[in-house]
Image (cartoon, rainbow, N blue to C red):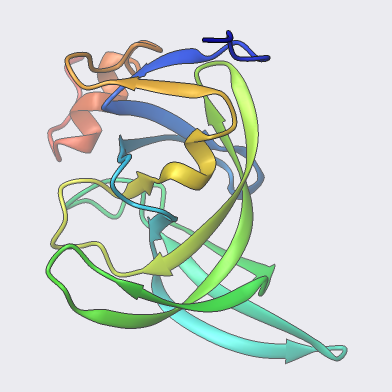
Length: 162
């Protein structure tokens, strides 16, 4: 059996990631080897056409149950795909290309936009992204460290201690 030609970074099943081009330094993501594509919680998704280019304007709310640090962004549409959720429901989604900061590396990731309000994580990182040199250890969490305490408290919709 031959050794792989690249090294792999060990990641936990959940990690704090960043979306630098969106101005989102912290968002909790589930690393899901059962999902092919990555997805991001988005709201007010609006497809537009600017100078002959298909674009999408949408909001990103990094925190569950808290609209602090929400941003509105506009990006080119990379693709549109039918995605089947874990519940078996099929949905047509817009795909954008995003830089995702994970464990000290920045990856170019194809991400579908959808409402993830009912999900436990605002972002899901799928196999296509993880194939860029990551192994997921399902027994570990936050291998890359945790967001600062004040950030985590904000994520729980709790005011930070003074």
